[in-house]
Image (cartoon, rainbow, N blue to C red; front, side, top):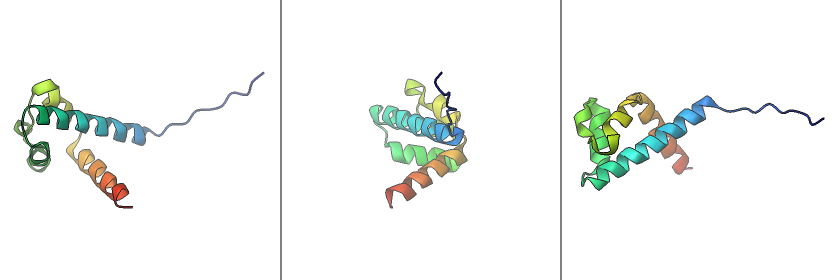
Length: 84
């Protein structure tokens, strides 16, 4: 009889990956609409005003589902990993 192994997963890493995927989708949607995605996302993160994010491809709703502090945290972790 084969030994069963317990699979482990890190919910924080899954959450971080979902945040990265959402940011990529929002970034691409803004770019497709002709906006500067970096400026628009920064404006949203600083002000909390969803008007900075286009509703194109449901980008506004997608980004609002994620806590802004979580987005900043993910961006800083990515920056730190990039600079190692």
